[in-house]
Structures are given as C-alpha cells and as structure tokens.
Length: 291
Figure 1: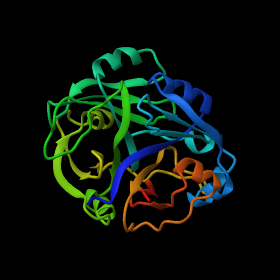
Figure 2: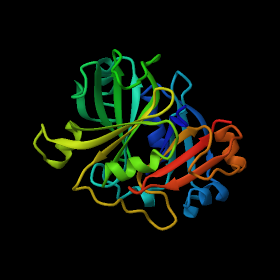
Figure 3: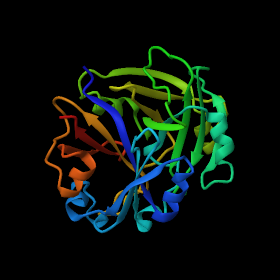
Figure 4: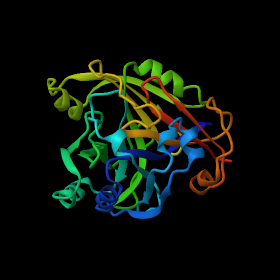
C-alpha cells in the first residue's frame, strides 16, 4: 500500500490576494474559504510572521480544492520562477488543453509554453502558464494510459492537482526523503524539459536528471535536478515566495511527525492530524492524516 498521496493542494505566497483570486477564477475555480492565518498555524509552518496574513482557498468544478493563496507581499516580491530550488510547479489535470489555451489568452495567466505533446509520451499534452505572483502551473491533458505511470483523466475542464514539480540540487536525495513513506514507486530517467531549457537558455533538446515518484490515487511527485539553480531565499519568519508548500494525504505510519491541528487547521484539514517539514531543496511538505 502506498502511504503517501494523493497530492491535495499547493500553497502560493502572493503579492495581492484579491488579484490572484480573480485570476484563478479564469480556470473556472470558485472561492470556497477565506480568512486570516492564525498564530498557531503560522508557527506550525515555522513561519510565525505569516500570522495575520489573509488567505483564500479555491476549488475546481470537481470540488478539488487544490490551490491555497496566502498574501505576503514582503515574502513574494523577490521571487523569480525557475532560478531557485523548491516547488516549481503545480501540474493540474485538464480535459482539453488546446481549448483552455484559447480561453486563457488575455487572462491574468501568462502563457509560457503553448500546448504540446510531452517528450515522455504523445498521450500526454500540456501547456505551461505563469500566475500573477510568479508561480508556475502545468495544465495537462492525459489522453490515454501511460504505463508504468498511473495518471488521472480529467472529469471537468480543470480538475485536480496530480503532480507537484520540484527543482532540486539532487534528485536522489530528494527522492530518498519521500521514499521513507511506504509503498512508493520510483522511476529515474533523463528527459527534455522544454520550459526549463527556455528559461535557462539551454539547447532546446537538452535533457535533465528526473525522478518521478508514484503516490497513491493517480498522483505523483516530479523531481527535476537543475544544476544551475540556487537556494531560494526565505525571509526569517515567513514562508518562501512562489509555491511555498504542497500538502499531501498520508495513511499509516508517517516519517513526518503528525500532531493535532489547531482550530483553523481543523476547518481546512477536516479535523485530521497534520505534520510539516522542510525538504533538502527548501520545499515545504505538509502531510494530512487520512484517518
């Protein structure tokens, strides 16, 4: 049994909450909860300065609440995507990426990669967009089974988060941390990552060391080793800019210590225990007990 997964939600530190909420609505998402981060939760994330920040959670038409936005313009202002270690992108399942690309033209999302079939399989077609605070989304249409991977097919225009993507200084060390969860499958290979190659000015066919970890419920983690990336700056007491953390469901024994969530946390995590740690790439990893 795989004891980690699915990936549930990415947390983006944004410069302007209201602006970001409106931009995400262009993905046919709905605001489902908003409020203020309390001190207990900020301390839980090792980010006490986040207390008092305004947050919003949005869900897709499939009821997948896969994006949490936290307003912290001080932490967000210097973030530049691609250049630093940590969570790079949230890969989200969509049912027609070419139609969605037309819809997003002129929206608050900047299209940085037009729809194209992936190097790994022609059954996967994806585009890449940049959000208003620099965060990157991969919008991916899975058209057929792609063994040995277990991937979802979208049930709505925009469905759920299924692959958080990380830039790491070492795919092996990052993979080792997650492989402490029982039952995960690990795949190591080199592949072309067009959006990375464009960002760094590499040859377009350049390949990079990648690890893919198969989680529960058609969910995965992708670990991209990019040698020129540098550690992401994180202001003392704040979450990092960009995608600061990704939340996962976990079942069974967890290598990340779980504790009772606070009052605010129970409203987000359905009264379940949760745990948090920072990985070797500086990424925030939040786990929520399935029990």
